[in-house]
Structures are given as C-alpha cells and as structure tokens.
Length: 221
Image (cartoon, rainbow, N blue to C red; front, side):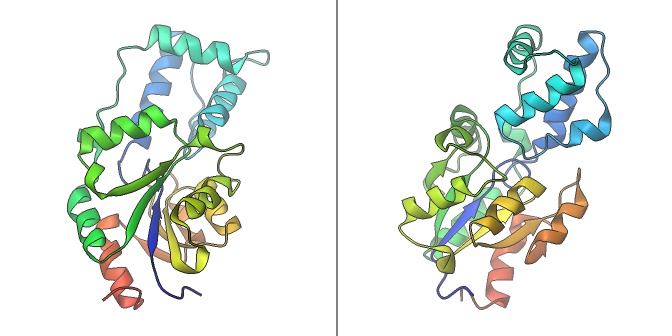
C-alpha cells in the first residue's frame, strides 16, 4: 500500500524513449553484415536486459563458443555508424509529463539496465535534465534487472521506501525487479512484448497517461 507518493522511478528504454525496436534493428543489421541471421524470438529476449545479459544472449545466437566481450567489440568495429537518436526516439509529451509530475512535488529518478553513458546521452539529447533528480544505471549495482538491486539503490538515494514510490516499467525483467523490490508498478505497453504489461499493477499506453492515473488512484491531486 502506498502511503504518500514521494518519488517515481522510471525505466528508460521503452518508457521514456521508444528505443527498443531501434536496438533490435541494429542487432539484426550486425548479424546480417557478418553473414548471420538473428532469431527473432530469441532476439526479443534482449528487451530490457542489462548490457552484460544482452551480449550473452547475442553470443549464444552467434555460435556455441562465442565470447560476449569479443562479440561486443566486433559490433563496435563493424557497426559504428549505427547510432540511436534519443531525441527522435523520445516519447511524445515526455518533457511536459515529467514537468507536470515535478510540479506535483514528486522526485523523478531513472532506474535503467543501460550503461551510464547511454543514460546521460539520453538526458542531454531529450532535454529532461531539469526534471531528473538522480540516475541508477545497470553498471552501478552488482546485479542488474531482473534482480531488485537497482530499485533498492534508487530508494536509498531517495531516502525513502516502497511505500512512498512507484516504478514505471515495460519489460518482464523490469517488472520482476520492481516487484522484488516491493514496488507497485505502472506498466507501459511494450510493442515488442505486450504480454509483459500483465505484470503491472496499473496498465498505461504511455507515460503521458501517468498523471491522470495517479490522480485516479488518489496519489496526487
């Protein structure tokens, strides 16, 4: 039960930016450039995964003896031209929604399995810096999602607990992590894995619906 909402903990990819389909396109291109074909269903398992887990999954598709680190290095060498524009991927209404939530006195955190440089670049390109209180990246905790460490770290930064926060997620890994941290969740529907939303306490189609949801749940006025 949420007593008094103080903070919102946002996943990044698929929630703040519609980046996941772009990443999958990049991986398919990477495989094709090297004479290989990525399995579509196995590729979807990378959605919401940490950097380490993503390259483990890709290496398993690549060959039985493939080393994830070496595969990642090959990607950097052969696909340097594939660069995601976070500005173009930003969810419509992103800044307005975060601004409204901030005006309601809420502190906003990004809790992502992505690497810190990626999160920082997203913040810079989308212009959301004024609204973000702090960030927890996948590499800042020992165990990334689906383990709860990132969300527990975010609550420590916020100096609060699960009775005063909600998480906003879209992936199976993310919902598992939030639930393990004791958090209620608003679930954005994923285009790549729409069934994942069933794990959310409150389903929404976009974060632009979040302020209205919080009003209906009497968590803000």
